Length: 263
Image (tube, rainbow, N blue to C red):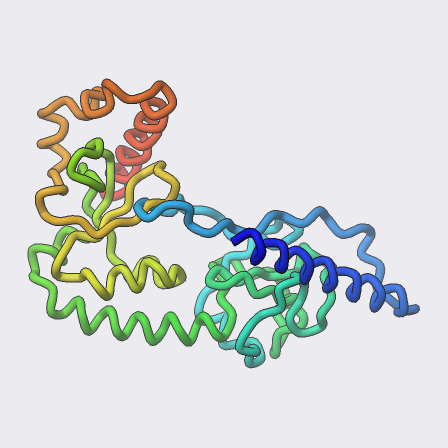
């Protein structure tokens, strides 16, 4: 793992050196008045179980960049692998970050004006590159085919806030039974869903490092049943660390907000 990280850092360094040399050779470069600092890329999921907190898509310059599948069709075909050093896939320049879109599915970067046809401004919805858009359409069809075979009782619980645990001896935690079609941008969640739809419940755990899981019926509890057991008062984590208790309270607040949204 360390050798892979070292290799990746070396490739990033080389790509940035080449980019710097290319820029120095341009005599008519457009001045942007100083590019804003680059925002860090989204990190990979760090755990096997949990919900992705809903986040606003960012351009490198910090501007809102939510783009929809409809926008994905407005860009040229992509190579099999995006460049690892960052920057626009089309013009190869790592500049004008306020107009540099990041794909929600794979982190491919393209300037709004480098798309074909170009965009006049940063889109309001989540933006996906053509490659991810194509994959998501295929995954949606595959999931919908499987969902038709899922018992109606399980389908009817999509979006239900509940209590769940990720292991026999784990804490009962505020969670939601999710519809996998809501997470098409996450390939790992899609594959988890394909393997378990109709067999186990698909849940994510609020405020728990974006953890997703497929759990048996016995690891799911109706919200009111958990309240009757005083899980909402911290009974489930009474022997946990102080940090874990604070995290539980945050999860509890998020679950209540989600239920208000349902209403």
